[in-house]
Length: 120
Image (cartoon, rainbow, N blue to C red; front, top):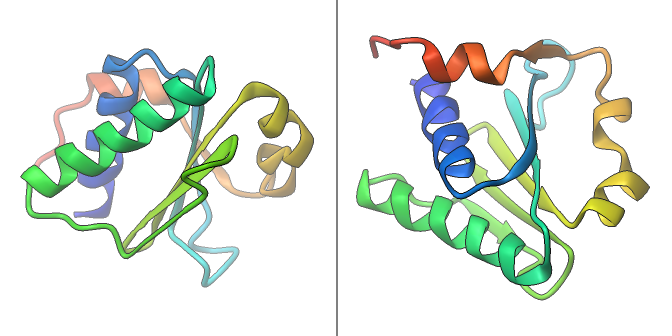
């Protein structure tokens, strides 16, 4: 179920032209989450539109966010049952560098995931 939701979120972000989508599996490293999905938008408006679209599309599938933060900043966080979605402005993403902080996590190839037929 979680990987199916990860793929859905990655597809939504990809369809909305998010930049540099990264997926990191961290379930063996932390109890915080199972997956981090990290993406960038080109402007505050784009970041907000990406977050809004993820929230809307998942709600259409009956999946509600457990937590949302940062609507007025360059970093919006959405949390869905073990999946944490981080949508950044590029400069904010570079500053916090979550990819480096969670470098021990398992990187998931986004293009390969998007091309995979997941049976859930």
